[in-house]
Length: 137
Image (cartoon, rainbow, N blue to C red; front, side):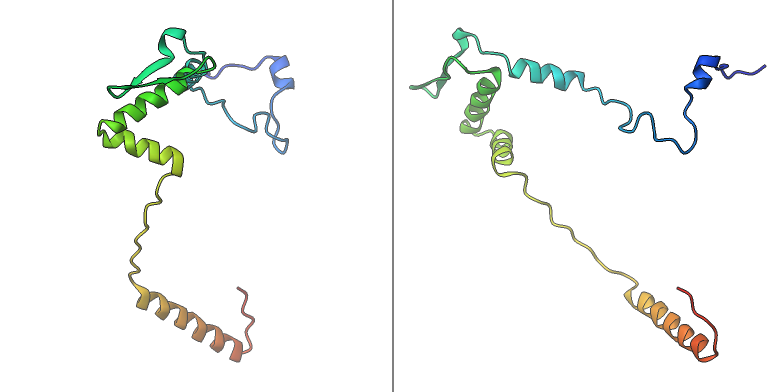
């Protein structure tokens, strides 16, 4: 019993053939439902009741009529950083200045062994050339 599904004649006519360009060159679409939901919400206009935000004990910030939830979140992150949250401060710095590149530390081992192999290959090539053989690299 064959477990593979049989193709209908219509499906066979449209089946991809070797040598043709890929019918799905960019691959399966990436679904990001949570990211898309955040994006939709962040771009929504902020209700009037949330536009005036207290910043400290005495200061108030009016985000204005065109403020979005993204603006509101940014103020909240600034408040958190001002209160001493290092993660919030780091997030703000990373967003503004970009992440600090991590240094790459490499240690070369077997350097002598590699140079020895290179030297052996050069000697072997010279010997072959002197013997009249053709060296193809």
